[in-house]
Length: 229
Image 1: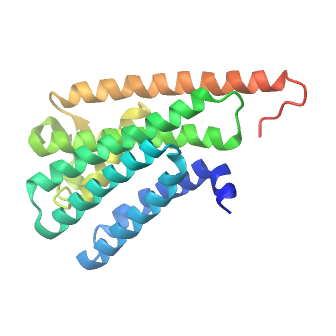
Image 2: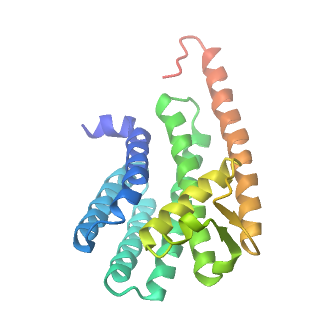
């Protein structure tokens, strides 16, 4: 069972990421006690999946430490709405997500052969990078709300912290993919800098990671008995 999970660890992570992305905005209007239970379940799921991804002892310890900080800050915010808890949550989440992206990418670039799950891992790294930037945007909005231009139909919903988190993740994905929509847009520094850096990172990520995966696939193909799976 454990071996099967390890062979599909990135697929498991992708399922978690997509599930959270779909359920987070829907859960924003749920009773707070129910929402706390949902937060706890999400943390437990992430711990289980990321314990599989983080194979080295120091990676697991650091990952668990950061998750504990995120969970503690989230609970503190739900119970008290302290400004410090909000800042601490987004900083811890950004660090944790960036760390997860680094671990996934390093493992991909160290591989001599490529499997389907490694390709899914590259996609997971892309989504995690977007989530990390989403937390940076949330920090910028907390200190400088005027640095964003937000459509009227969305502005009224930014008072809900959970919806706000979702909207910044959404804005981050739009920026990372360079699609861009007009409902949320940068209006001043430092968000201008964050958006152009993320846009460049998104294009660089696709170019470099895809080149690595294609190169490994071609190397496997020319080997006797080579397989892409």
